[in-house]
Length: 431
Image (cartoon, rainbow, N blue to C red; front, side, top):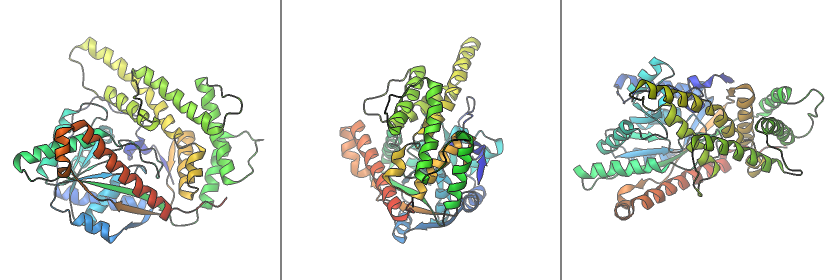
């Protein structure tokens, strides 16, 4: 099922970003909240083709046991559809949540923004010091009227088995909210709950794989080009065609004998360095490529969605900078999609799910549309919560170090759960 212009309903796929905005606070409405949970469950079934959702009773009991507690749900976002999944799950366990969402999700259509706010969502400008949003996050955590749902990766790469490093700012806000809660209750707790969401196909996907390969071959290969070989060999040929076109665009000449993965890595590094130079960003030594891509996205978001200048001439100059920054989105989306176009992702775990992840990204690059295949099973795993009260002494002694340690702990738990789910539920690829 192709989803044309998926940006209208999928935040992660929004390529046309909004102009400077006003903060969108949550305006919870019980009736809208009730409706939204049912819409989410229907969306999971119909649009996302998820006909079966599985969560262990022990995980359900773990969540139900936290009802009434101060909780921050920190969920994987690698599939791109997790907000719908979490909202549908909240109905099942009988809780209400607030949701932190990127500002562009509110500005696709006036009614969508209005509805989201009343369903419990509020906005944030990614990569910016969005003080109204940060203040609201701290208040929500301190008051503990509802749970809060945040996707700490901040970006999705549409590789369901991949976890981007968690943004430490999310954990830092959690500690700030915990500190605020302790002012009124010295025995306060704040449970950070790691969650992983995995999608797996329920039927034979050979026909869908073949159809996707044929579509891509018709647009990427010359009529006389070789189309024979195994599925993986054909995928490699398509990936190489996309790579070759982008090498030509960016003036990158591969060295003789370079392996495909090495060429793809050089291409990604080239594009990211170009964007970092234009944004005047200097990557840290410990940043991997995915983290650098996210930093670039955040920097562009901060420029495009930032506050207006007071003086007309300064606003004119800022508008020129915004226009130039918007032009970087296409290259950023392209390099993000390139992340999946490498042999290692399928070779590391040769599954139907990983193969279709890569085909999906190739179709997004070539046709600018996302295909959703099914039927699928959605598996939800809940990890052991991290109670920030247990880390309070360490936090008081070393705030930055403790924030980093807790972020890495939560990230590692989500990564481990997702890996286990991939091994348990994915379909092996027959070559």
